[in-house]
Every structure is written in structure tokens, then in C-alpha cells.
Length: 86
Image 1 (spheres, rainbow, N blue to C red):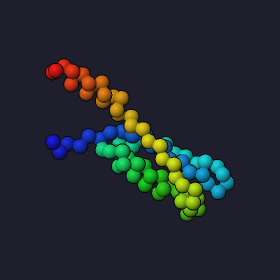
Image 2: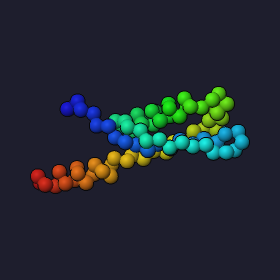
Image 3: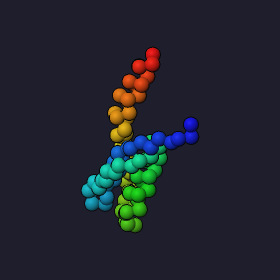
Image 4: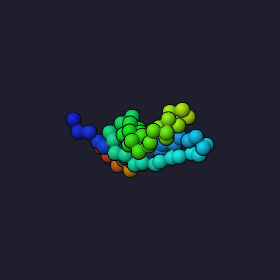
């Protein structure tokens, strides 16, 4: 039972820079859990920023929005498997 199921998450990261412009990035990430997906996406997002952009992000905050893309695909298969034996 040590098999880990990788799920696909869509993570959107946004922050406001010093010119009051909103910069955002949307990434699809494969991870076993929601916190893992957020961590992976945030790590990659911050790596791509320069020093001033990182400062603006820390000052104004980083908005993270996440949604799972696999739940809709897994739910019908899981439901049919549960209803057929019972």
C-alpha cells in the first residue's frame, strides 16, 4: 500500500509590484498532496524573480489560488467501482 498517487494541480500565484501592476503565473504541477503542489509551484515561481521583485512580493504578499484537476476525472471511476460491488 506504499503506492503514492500523483495528482495534477493548477496553481496560480499573484503579487503586486512597486508600480501597482499585478504580476501572475499559472502552473500545472504534479504532486501527491495540495501542500506539496503549492510548495513546488511557489519554489519555482520565486526562483524566477530578481531581487527587487522578491522584495515587492514579500512586501505586498503573495496570493496563491489552487485547484485540483484530477478530482473530476477520478470521482466517476471511484464512484462506479464503489457502487458495482455493493
